Amino acid sequence: MKKLFVIILFLFSISKAQETDSTLYKWIPSLVGGFNMSQIALSNWTKGGENNVTWSIKGDFDVDYKAKGWKFHGEIKAAFGKSKVGEEEFRTNDNEIFIDKVFSLNAGWIVDPYISNNIRTQITTGFDFEKDPVLEISDFFDPGYITQSVGFTYDHNKIFKTRLGVAFQEVFTDKFNSYSDDPDTPEIEDFKFETGIESVSDSKFELGENLIYRGKLRLFTRFERIDEVDVLWDNTITAKVNSWLNTNLTFTLIYEEAQSKQAQWRQALQLGVVLTII
Image 1 (cartoon, one colour):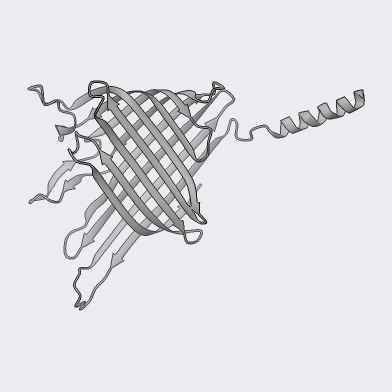
Image 2 (image 1 turned 120 degrees about the vertical axis):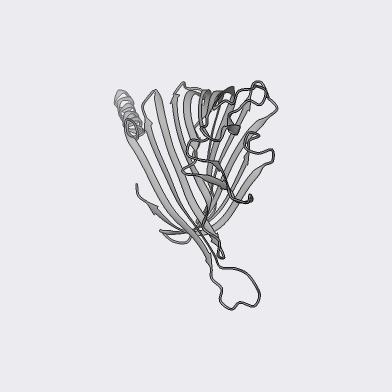
């Protein structure tokens, strides 16, 4: 009986050793780059229409580090693109960079305590092409948003993760002060500090064979205007043609009163080349 007990204990210790997380104390990076394009060319086309071409470059870098009592996740996303219709000059249609860093403790609960810092801005000058002449309305870090938050995160699922916390948001501007200025004061402010609540949720799952959905939803509300909620909802459905060719359907919804009194949205359907570098 003692021998049987020793054998069972030995086998159990082996199984526990095999369950050791092989990702502990390792930096695990991921880098994916893509080039998307759509194009129409016409010649003597009696049904009407104009030549047009649209292109965009996107990059997505992630890095994870896990220890026994804590873990770190970092993310950098950037996108830039332009489009041209007829004889018009190329116009910017994609222009953003997003950096997110999250440090969380393994508390043994359903949710874990975390601290985070994220940065949002654009890569280059933005224009309002509805104006005549064309009007500059934004530029790199003009405005720029930096947000720190402290709270609790659920990150135990490959499909869905979310976090909710008290947030401190700083808005920086240079020439385009409408994003940071307080209209109730006579001075024009180029910096704004806000406190509130931030929620960030990420999801990724398969809709079917070679069909993947990715989504990110960020909500931010200020304590002084709790009924006003900033929304950033980014959605991508990718249909994989082969190892390097994808079709992408993207939809982005933004609502932020300092930018526009109405909701902004952008949709695109493009064929793209995707390279998994790391």
